[in-house]
Image 1 (tube, rainbow, N blue to C red):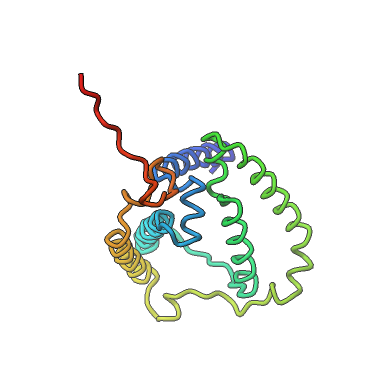
Image 2: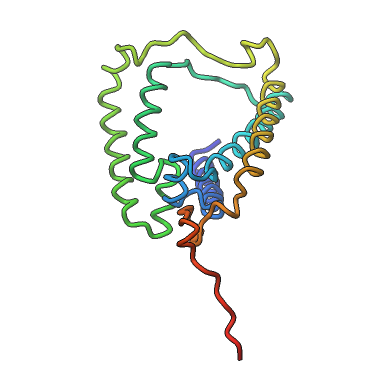
Amino acid sequence: MSLVTAILIGLLMGAVFGIALEKSRVFEPGVIVGQMQLRNFIMLKVFLTAVATGAVVLAVLNGFGLVKLAPKATLYGADIVGGLILGMGIALAGACPGTVMAQIGAGYRDAIVTLIGGIGGAVAYSYAEPGLSKTFLGASNGKLVLSSLLGIPFWVGALGLAILCVGILVVLERLFPSDRELGANVDGDLAPRDRAVPRSVAVAR
């Protein structure tokens, strides 16, 4: 694959991803913060849908021998510490690396500050990584793949994961219907019932 082709495919995939984020409203700060506060579950539903879809696609491609998986080594300390730092940043900023560009495109000016901070953090990490890799954050016991631990083919484990995700989605949707979680402004900010915005009333001619 040539560099130009790779760039074009990347741009196309980015456009599809951005459209999906906008239509699902997951890029809205209210939706993101609401998920971190366990006030709504729109973000979790979308992510579970993505995981289920990706698992099925990978199961098919790997099952037919079209792709070869190359999982990275599991870094337990780095995953836990990095996940906590990332989660705190998402909760404070109301954005994550996957949504900040969509927020900028939608007109959220404060997302520009988040983007600058993210780029600064990435640059700082690139300089700190050699030293951090020599601490407990760089410790690893090798690759951790669930299907290998269970002694089953990857495609079987991937399809099982997809089924599990779909089951969780069904339960979440029954308990927390999406149309009730978007809020009056379709941004995930749920107003108290006594302050809910009344529906427009048709004016009699």
